Image (cartoon, rainbow, N blue to C red):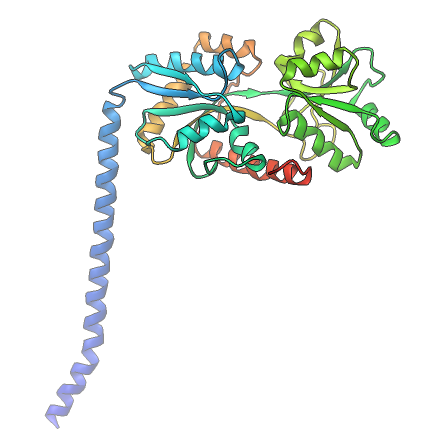
Length: 347
């Protein structure tokens, strides 16, 4: 009888003993993981204190002289003073930024290679052609260094006094209005595609190789309207040769206070902003990213950078960065991808 009682006691106690041991083991694993994570975090922090120890390469996705190039070079020049190491610009133009982004994506994430590019290389181009990178996984947004503002314009002697006038005419005369754009699938093009979807009108889109030929076609009377960057049409507007009907920004542009945005005009999806951004390859240590972001942010506060950016109408007071910038890229990647698919512009 005593033997049976002892066996029953053992059977009752064993499960409790096993559960206790398992709990202790789980705690040991948990705390070990915390220690390891803290150790690697400490290692990264220590490494970042000495970073950078050699020059940094800044790939630039456009040719010398373009707005992206000029603004990126000035931002890099000012940031290098803060970091204490030279930032060497290296132009790798082509494919709307896809060439340079592909090079960056295959680079080592050691904090010594970054890229200055327009957000379209991540939000538009991958939907239109095959690229060698995943825009949401292979690159990490660091900080914005400008915005590309765009507008829809007509000749000053055009009968269209407002954007509504233009759309009303389109509705009554399908296919009679032509619209010049600086390239296929870029912001001015997608903006008008959005309008056509919402208004159910037909506008003939004619792509050109850049804002200059698009504006030349408008001024020559070869097209009814045009979409271009602010820097591409502002001189013509100030000279009285064109009239701005709307912009694609989220709020009115400082140099065009009387021109409404598509959002103001009732187009709920009419905000199409293209940003100038600095990105890094995946694997770049967060502490290094933070240090580079801080250097560029301070560099962009200098009068030298501000003057340069304002010459291209791209200066932003509070540049986006980190998680905020990442989420913006993700949203615009989805939104622009949908427009491109609907317009059948994709690959």
